Image 1 (cartoon, rainbow, N blue to C red):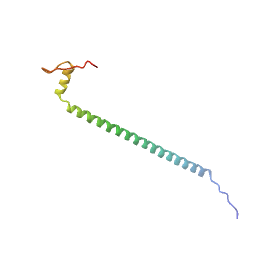
Image 2 (cartoon, rainbow, N blue to C red):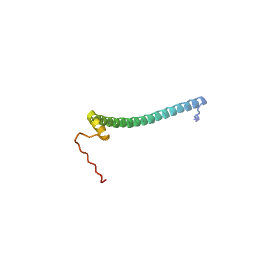
Image 3 (cartoon, rainbow, N blue to C red):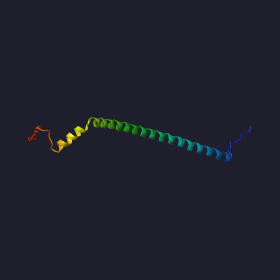
Image 4 (cartoon, rainbow, N blue to C red):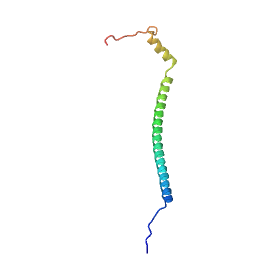
Length: 96
C-alpha cells in the first residue's frame, strides 16, 4: 500500500485564501456596523433625554408666563420706576 501525500494545487490555495479574505472582510464589516449601531443608539438615547428635559423646562416657563398677566407686568415696571398707589406708603430698611 502506497501512501499518497496530500497536495493542494496552486489554484486551490488561491481560492482558499480568497475565501478566507472575503470572510474576514465580512466579519470585520459586521462587527464595525454593530459597534456603530450601538454608539448611535446611545447618542439617540442621550438626545431623547435632553429633549425631554427641554420640553419639561419649556412647559414650566409656559406655566409661569401664563400666570403672569399684563397688569402684573405693568405694576412691576411701575414699581421699578418709583411709582406707587395713591396714599400708599413705602418703607425702606436702612439697617442693612
